[in-house]
Image 1 (cartoon, rainbow, N blue to C red):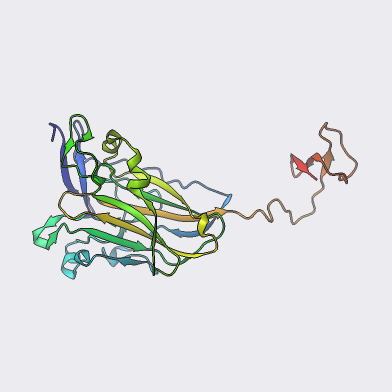
Image 2 (cartoon, rainbow, N blue to C red):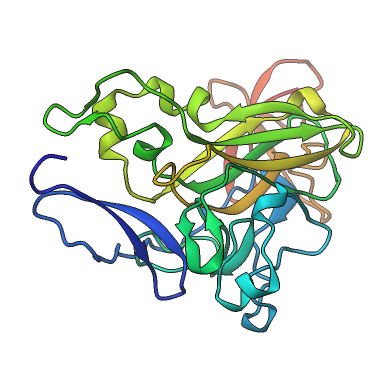
Length: 311
C-alpha cells in the first residue's frame, strides 16, 4: 500500500464494525457531518408501502427486524446467544443511526444494518461467505409503482483490493467482485425469486476505478427501481447482501427509507365541493356571457386564478 494509505477495521460508538480507508491528510476516526433531515414532499405521488425501521428500541438488542419481515441466512452466520451477548451479529439487524464512519440517516433515526464477515477467534468468527436476505412482507402493487430506497455502501471494497495500484488508483488485474447488494422479487410468496437489481452490475460497474476509489466511504445514495411490470400483483422484495468468504473482503452496508409510490389518481383533481362562479374568455381575452357551448380552448377565471381550459 502506498505511503499515507491505510485500510482499517473500525468500530463506531454503537459497536458496529466497518472497513475504513484512511487516505493521506485525513483523520482516521473522522465523523461525517449529518445530512439535513428533510424528506421531499411529493404531492403527486401516493404511498403504497413504507418501511423506515423506526420500531426498534434499545431493549430489543441487535437481532431485531420489523414485524412481518423475515430473514434468509447462511447457517454459518446465524448468531449464537454468546455472539449476541458480545454485540456480534453478521446478519441483518436494526439499530440507531450514527455519524461515525457513515452518514446519519435522513429518514428518521433507525436503519437496517449488516456487518461484513471478519475473523475473530475469540468469538468463533472465520469470515464465512455471506448470502443474507432481508425479506419484506407481501405488498399489493398498483399501476406505475416505483421502489425508492437509501443505501450506504462502499463502492471501492465491492472489488478485491489486494492488488490495487495505490499510486495510479486502478485495479491492476481487473475487477474481481467480492461483495454486492442485490434486490430480489417474488410473486409467489417466496417460492421463487427473480433478481431485479444488483449494485455492482447496475451502478458501480459503470464507474471508473478512480470513481470507485473516491466512493470508498459509507454515504447515503438514493436508488429508484421501476416496478410497473408488476402492476396488480402481490409481491415480496428482498435485499440480498452477498460477500465472498475471506478476511478483508467487502464492507458493511446500511439500508433505510424504503418507499413504494405511484402517481396520485387524477379522477377528482380540481373538483370543488362548494359553489364556484367562473368567468370565461376567448383566447383573445374577450369576456363571454356564459360558459361556452362550442368546443375549443378558452380562458377560465375563478378561485383567484386564470387558467386555460379545453371544453
